[in-house]
Image 1: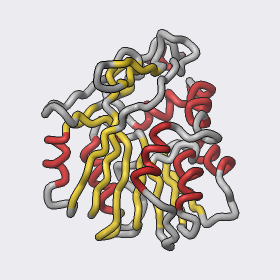
Image 2 (image 1 turned 90 degrees about the vertical axis):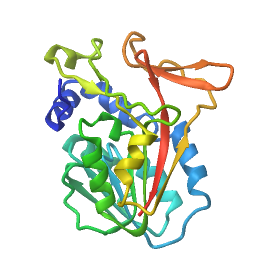
Image 3 (image 1 turned 180 degrees about the vertical axis):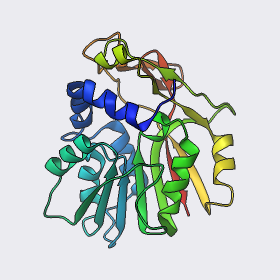
Length: 249
């Protein structure tokens, strides 16, 4: 039940229409996490940053970041050529943007290259998230920041590694397992010891109700539940403890 890069690409090809719709969903409208990220980033930054978007998908994150960083050079990497083709179609080619097919486990960038490294909703889907995190930190400049969205267990010292199959998708017939892994703040602190000057977790709590995003409600579509304290997101019957991690190298 290992989640490998080749399995991810194979599943994308089999479920191409579903995958494309997922990638494109928040291109013309900002997701709640995108809005939350922009609150964290604060005012528009005019610096001439070098910004890397790892596992960029169809370029949705960079599409919005282009407005926040108008003078930055952007570098987008993904292991999926189909996703990179979509990103090239979606993004303003008049801006300085470079695209690269590269694995998050062995990024084809020199160390200490980027002022900002973004990686969105990807760490949770990897079988070796610590190795990927080390790569993100490696390519970041000293004093720069790695900013990523993933599942983190902030309130309990418990790591959860979950493998699943969505039987409403065609890829399930190939017995391809995907992952939603939740890393505890306890483990994260150990991973970053000696590798980062500081780090902070911003817990993401939905402010609006999520409607089931799956064409088949018995699949991995997401919805929100109201508790006495907050809304929580449930996807395919799994609790999604989203947070944005900001690492200062």
